[in-house]
Length: 272
Image 1: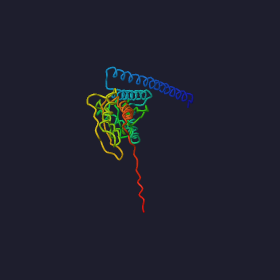
Image 2 (image 1 turned 60 degrees about the vertical axis):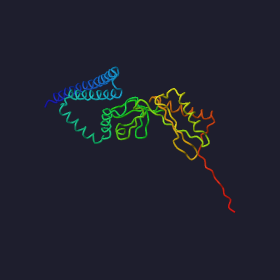
Image 3 (image 1 turned 120 degrees about the horizontal axis):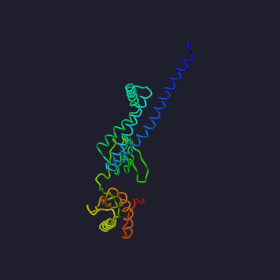
Image 4 (image 1 turned 90 degrees about the vertical axis):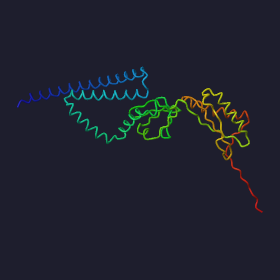
C-alpha cells in the first residue's frame, strides 16, 4: 500500500475543506456586514419617507435577521452541506430550541401583535400593568424600550406588555392632569378656587379649551379636598403637574389659605 498517496490524498482533502471553510467564513463576515448595512439603509429610507417610528425598528430588525439567515444558508452550501438537509436540521433545531425558548418566541409573537394593533406609538407616554411608566422609545421584535421620567432606560419584554393592561396616557394627544388640594374647614372654598384658577391661567402649558374647573371632591377628616383637572398636550404632562404643585402652594401662602395635615385631638376626662 502506498502510504504517501494516502497521506497526499488526505492533505488535499483537508486543504479543500479548509479553503471552503475559509470562504464560508468570509461570506458570513461580509454577508453579515452587508445585512446590517442594508437594514440600516432601509431604516433610514423609511424615516425619510415619514414611516411610523414604531414600525421602522421592527421592520429593520426583521430584514437584518432574514438576510443573516440567508447568508448562513449560503455559507453552509459552500462547505458541502446540502440546503435541503440544512433546512431540515435547522427546522429540527428550531423545534427543539422552541421548547427551551418559549418565552422568547412569545415575546416575538407579542411584538408582531403590538405592531399590528398599535396600542401605542414611539413617543407615547404609557403605563404598563400599573407598574412601569415612561415614554416609548422603541418597539423591537422582542422588547419595548421606555425612557422614564428620571431618564432611566427600561426594557420590557413584549410578552409582558401584551399580557398586562396598557394605559396610553398620551394616546389622545391631549391629557387631563388630575390634581387634589386640601384646605382647612375654616378657609374659604371660593378663595381657594380662585387661587387655583389664577395659577392655572399663568401656567404656559394649560389649554384654554376645555376650560379648567375646580370642584369640591370630598370632605376629609381634617380638610376639604378640592379637585381640578387642567388639560395640556401630552408631552407637557409632567411640566404642568409640577408647575401646579409648586405654584398653588405659593399662591395659598400669599392668600393665607391653609393646607392642613392629619392630626388627632386627645380629650382627657377626669374621673371623680
